Image (cartoon, rainbow, N blue to C red; front, side, top):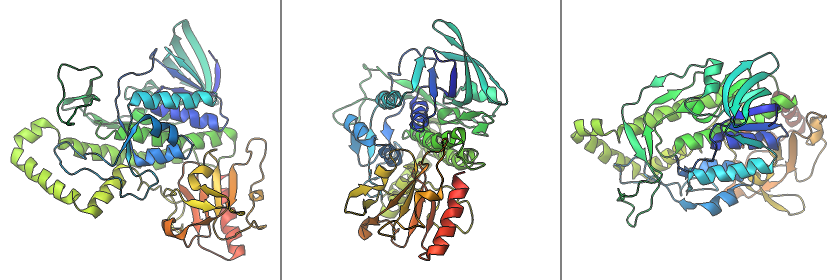
Length: 455
């Protein structure tokens, strides 16, 4: 086993595997350790949401995931409700949920990580971590005895009982469990009745809800269930963890490679912690609809509430709003300045683009290599003020930004018609957008923006 790594990822669940793949895509030497000796067979989550599918598409992975599962137009917001959430009306290139057992999700992500050179060691449990000025010393217990690993950073993707979180001294406040449910994946003819004689793969699920006070402490970082845990309604924990990984991966890689602007790595906490809080609070509210002691005690009130929610969900605008919120399509990060364009921080849709010469592509295809994309939508051919030379690539920052000149189809550009240029982050969120057509102003804005994101 390796004794040196730039990043040691603790935990080989979906979050840890995707994070490792993102780091490796950026050329970061990454090692994953997992205390379990074999991959998880039981499925703790079944749904991949539209935003998670978009993120996978941004790395060229959506096709293999879609081929392994089954798409559905939506799912029930809570069991007592009759009206399902409808993803099919959402403004997304993936307007559906994907039913895919977590064991298959992990297998696909592990395959991706290994393709990129990630080393994964199972049966290795972290026993101690000691953070120094320039590294983290990690002691593990493996099948052949103790192992010592030195890493520049350690990412804790090791679940609700995270040893990385405890070593970092990060508080994990929240509510204690008040009930336990059973979670299992099964198929029936009428999608209603569970055969009690078949209980293979059924797991206990508890409604304890906790959120780490910080997602970063020096060289130790948290993602997935190590940062937030809640009752598993709608597989929101799985999707939240995947989105954590996509946010953290490129930032940590940029920091290690030396081209990150000052403070970039700290934005992982400032961007993702509010999202984690919103999800944990939302799942607590959803859980109230299925918490049997409360439902039994307030049966009449619970019935009326469900009838009201069914009526509200039957309104297309309300259904679309809630579906967009739960699927994370509406997640937007704070803009760097109050004067930023209103689209700054929002996700970029998967626009169909026409390049000079007539070649067709999509915005998500442009993100496959994990770089920033500077998309010029106004100039049909390159000009001296819109070239990648605005960033001088060096040995530690080879081509961190890809410049593309293209036209969009007006009917499907999702409100981007007026934009002349947009900078897209590696995780598919808009870093900067402008509508200016003045070449000098455009040059100044662009240069200021690139200096903010890339050193």
